[in-house]
Image (cartoon, rainbow, N blue to C red; front, side, top):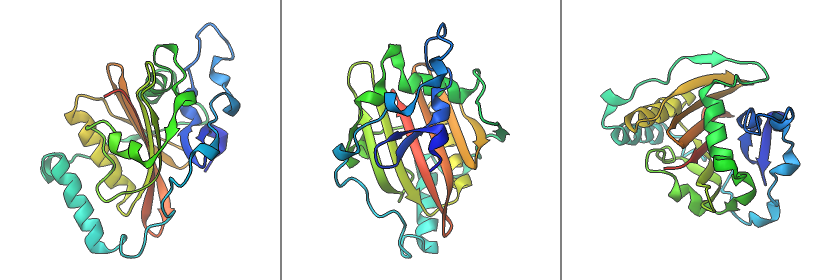
Length: 225
């Protein structure tokens, strides 16, 4: 996990550092320089929230992959409605202020000026409380989950593993986003494929990366519904 560009949620549950770009006070020249200590959550509150950090051979079997893809297609209304994610734009260390990712980050982390990252609680139950538009990919194995509905916040962060490819994951979330009135923009940075978009004050960000043995690790962040 590349903590140089992410702030951490306890034991490895993360929202990438790129999300903080532009999220602060526009009059403060240091607003985009928030450090980890401002958003850390005590890892002792996590408890026994994580499942195995790898998928079993059975979970990675071809029939399981085919079943997951079939279920994903059903969730978008059929395979003919499952469309690829938009082409990825490559960025360096800093994401542009006008990108969908920056807008989604601002919406998720600091709605109305709140610091939702400070309010999260850890429980696998948050994975079942994602917005209907953005469920965990079918047959995905949740590793960690956190969220909050305190005050103006409606933040969900779920990390999971899936045996399908990154392209499969991004196509599913891009299709779900478009069908539910969200935008979809893809960027690639430091090996992560990142899909994000907004619908009014609601937002989502999907971070996907190879996890070995043909599996994909995903961090799904949503705010609003």
